[in-house]
Amino acid sequence: MCGIVAYIGPREAYPIILKGLKRLEYRGYDSSGVALLNNKLQVYKKKGKVAELEESLVGKDLHAHAGIGHTRWATHGEPSDRNAHPHSSASGKLAMIHNGIIENYTQLKTELIKKGYTFKSDTDTEVLLNFIEDIQKNNNCGLEEAVRIALKRVVGAYVIVLLDKDQPDTIIAARKGSPLVIGIGKGEHFLASDASPMIEYTKEVVYVNDYELAILKADELILKNLGNEKLTPFVQKLDMEMTAIEKGGYDHFMLKEIFEQPETIFDCLRGRLDAEKGVITMAGIQNNIEHLKNASRIIMIACGTSWHAGLVAEYIFEEICRIPVEVEYASEFRYRNPVIHKGDVIIAISQSGETADTIVAIEKAKEMGAFILGVVNVVGSSIARISHAGAYTHAGHEIGVASTKAFTAQLAVLTMIALKIAREKGTIDQTRYMHLLGGLHNIPEKVKEVLKGSGAIQQLALKYKDAGDALYLGRGYNFPVALEGALKLKEISYIHAEGYPAAEMKHGPIALVDEHLPVVFVATKDTYYEKIVSNIQEIKARKGKVIAVISQGDDIISKMADDCIIIPEADELLAPMLSVIPLQLLAYYIGVAKGCDVDKPRNLAKSVTVE
Ligand code: G6P
Image 1 (cartoon, rainbow, N blue to C red):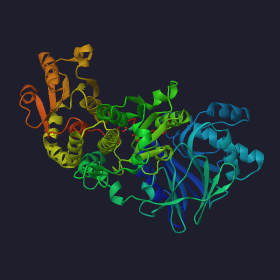
Image 2 (image 1 turned 90 degrees about the vertical axis):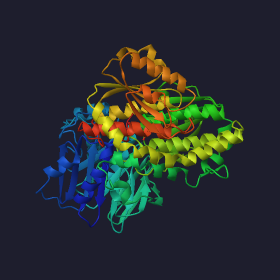
Image 3 (image 1 turned 180 degrees about the vertical axis):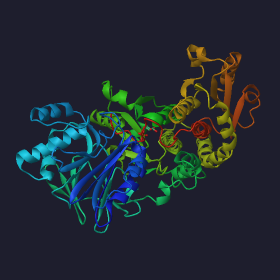
Image 4 (image 1 turned 180 degrees about the horizontal axis):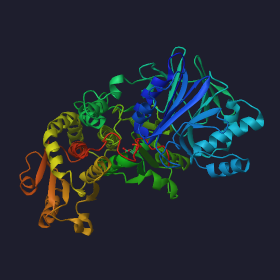
């Protein structure tokens, strides 16, 4: 969480930083600010979204060739002008932005208060900044050395970026735990939480690693470790186009991303799945197939929507690979002294590849000897780098805070991994294997069909937008889809929604059912069909309003439900990639109908880089 941008070079820094902050708003948007260095060090900050900062700066002298900017998701201190970044040091000589949490900030703050420091904000960031300034004063050293000394005392996660009034040609940055990308231009450097702010200026980037310090001048990049040894920057080619970060005619990124799913699933399968020949090519899986097929247990670790993808995968892996699977919330797994054996395989699932809880859970499992397979969307992200092996989801840049296309791509990749392992293990017969490969191959076309029904879903949204609560029910492969549908509705429209296994509903949630409660059933044709028909009866008997996602040709539920959304038939193992799409659309259209900011829902952030 929190987005950072910086620029140094011949161009005007402010417009680059402002545009960059708008692209990084998905990382947090409760306040924002910039610091510009041009003989004097000017800091401007404002509570609210970046547009509010922009408005407040109209008419100001913003001329500078070096600057830093920040968009915040509050951790320490409420969202306010005062707590917004950048922060200025006590002397006013330094300005700093920070993404992460300094865990021992209370201790550092107490030490500084004893020395007479006072603080303008409630943030851990201001504490670290003054700690750095104090070291600079006491040791009579430059900023670079002071940062190095300070970071040896710091416990926590950070990317920090600093400007020093006395060194107007330099920006200093350091990373541990939060993402940091440097863009290398001709006589200029860019720096940000991800590559989107620099994409139109350069394709050459360096991903900074943990415990590294970057000293940036317009025409020079020096990378060092905290031991002051110079490192050779590993320059990579950026594989991202401008279209990936534009709305392309859609009203919102979320809608664009929902509609991109036929292509993103196709991209995910492309070059990997050959349904005719019956071949799945995935180097990361093939090269580690012994580990995978001999796994005594698979543990899926993830958060949020990615956790739901893990739940679907649990059903798939157990069914066709016959390997026991557990699905863990990363945050819970890490702190409960988990039992890990050498033969265990961890599949870490993450869109951003930067989720702090998932990262620390992976580190823990790695220490304990598990093999880590990353299923990640963002290329070069932290999780991609700390995993032993992996498979990218290739869903492209996802900007809408609520995850959509990343989820279906995760399902596609996890299905291919399961099929590959099952094939190698011999736990799937040839006919079923070929049938599933063919089914997977056809998914992008079927997603197109589902999307054709968006108009009807928009109408449905108008009918149900004023609901106070909603229940989402499913069984088997569609149970995690129900959870995901409920999560989407909560995130986007702020309607309280719960997902439940349809049968479990009898053990509690049924008490909520009355004529006002919309109950969304994910009830495609599968093994559980007859049972879910009974569950629908149970809701109808209590006057609940039933909205059902059903398969084409269903003439039973279509007569029982108040409203139906019909999707093409697919094997039950593949159906979640289709059945989730109407639920994404329903949440989206309800959110829009209620006037919510669907791309930036309140209190959320896309990339949660704090534990
Ligand atoms: C945040 C996002 C969710 C996402 C979750 C996990 O909560 O708002 O959309 O599912 O983080 O993120 P990851 O990047 O690890 O998939």
